[in-house]
Length: 175
Image 1 (cartoon, rainbow, N blue to C red):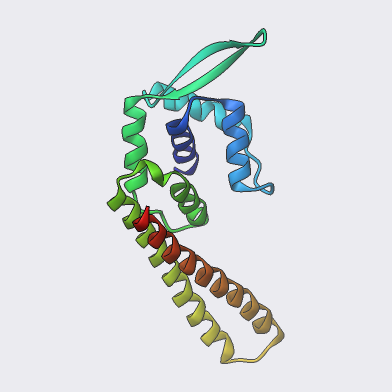
Image 2 (spheres, rainbow, N blue to C red):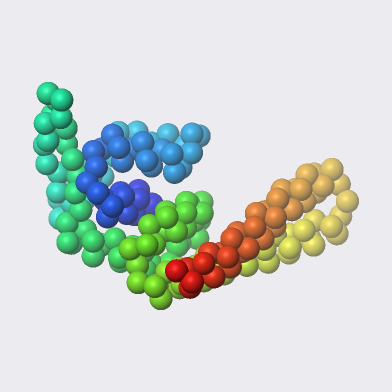
């Protein structure tokens, strides 16, 4: 879901080459998670076969370059993915990051709904971290102290995300 959402979201802006899409996704996911062309190009081919995008050859400075453009069916798929709740799991934060980046394509009420979902996700993180801290505090040990520090970081990050979300909603409502 994450790669498909990213690609369709980027193509909502403008047609792009596989190279541009890979670089954009690499920036999004960070330097520690490598995105190979062996993953990207089969996905682009799959999305083309499903009718979500069209790939055309374009000559650029004497070189042939494949450019992907989103189709109407691809736009429908993009909106479908945007409406799906972010699944629980390791890529949850990445999915929210992508959704928040491309949410300008949604109707205003859908943007607010997405922000509220993200807000609730942060509240859940806070609740889980607080419960973990409470459990860790029941027994004093070096391991628990280090684990507590990790959960304190999660709390701070979630609280910053909540403040950001509240400010974003206010700014969005003024715009």
